Structures are given as C-alpha cells and as structure tokens.
Image (cartoon, rainbow, N blue to C red; front, side, top):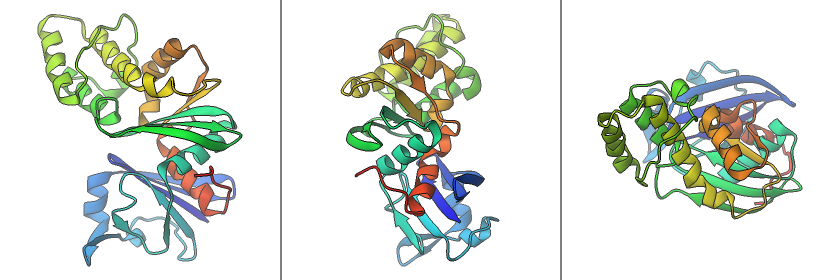
Length: 259
C-alpha cells in the first residue's frame, strides 16, 4: 500500500493507493487534525496515525508534502516538494505530460511549466493570500454565501481594486452598501483571483493549463481563466487531493518530476 499526505494550510488530505487504484481518501481541517491527532514530543509534532481509522500497514511507505511538511515529525515519512507532488498527481489524473500547472492552495499559488512529464521551471506567490482559497472563504463569509454558490458566478463581474485580502474585505462591504447585486460581486471576487494568477501563467507556454487545489472546484474561476488565456483549462477529477495523490505515486517509486 502507498500513502500520500498533503499537510495543507487549510486542509490535511490523505490518499491510500494500491497500484494505480485509489482505495481511500480522507480530508480534515488542519487545525482540528493537529489538535485531535497530534502530540508534541521534543519540540516536534507527531501525528498518531493509528487513531485515524485507516488501514495503514507499518511497512507502508509514506510520502508527505504541503505547507506543514517541514514542521512535523512523521515516523517513516519521506518529504517531497509540493511541485513534485502536484506535478505527478496532475500527470496521473489528466494523462497529460505537457502543460502549465496552476496550484491554487489555501494560502499560496504555485505555477509550474511541465514538458515531457518533467518540471522545467516554476514560480510561487506566497507573499499574499489574496488569490487563494483563504481569500475566497473570507469573501464568501462577508457576502453571506456558500463557497458553492460563490463558485457559480462569473457573469458581469464588477472590478475590484484591492490587492490585499484584508482590504478586499472592506471593499466588499462598500460594494454591498452601494447596492451592487451579490451575484455581480461574487463574479468580481472570482475574476480578481484569475487576475492575480495571470502574471504567473503568462510567463510560460499555454498549450494546456491544469488547475489543482481546492480552488479548482470553483467552476467560475475555471471559466474566467479559460476566457482570459484562450487555452484549454483542465481540472483533475480530485483537485483537492492532487498533491496527496502525487505523494502516494512517488512513494511507490514512480519517477519524479525532475526537481
């Protein structure tokens, strides 16, 4: 059995695979996961995986990635970079080997240029959460809509000027006071995410763009991104689990992305 774990900033994702078959997936809120299943020993966080109700064999190989990969002690675990994990997961889930990968995470954005199944270059924006899942969660809260409903709106988006997640919240409140319809504001929020990631995408060729991470479940962002770059945009079947799937594949000795 192969086990991949993505210790994300917002969610922890776990994937168990037998050969090329995904046999189990689990997802947890990150803070609750650490509080419920973690213990501090010698200044490090140890996770008690025996309490997760997962058929994890002690002999299983475990590969981990994500925001918390360097801050956790995991017996028998091997650390891989997020670019490695997400690239391998994207190749497995889409069947593509030439694409630009856009990973929209909980607090950062990563873009990689993949050619022949190998990463040739990559960029990362981890300075501001304004184009991330955390930003969308905050905006949905301010607008009193669900993330699902937010992710449906792309028609007639308003222009949003704020480039910071904190100021963006204040701007949303102002738009509501002005009486602008909520669907238009939602569409503007989605468009603002696309506009923030476009400068990174435009650095690389765009035969195909693969979008991973939980934000890839936002259909409006995928639609607006496709309209903006005029290239095919693909979301894997399990976008939120893409990094964990890549880890599970790497744990069985599948060739890495080259980084």
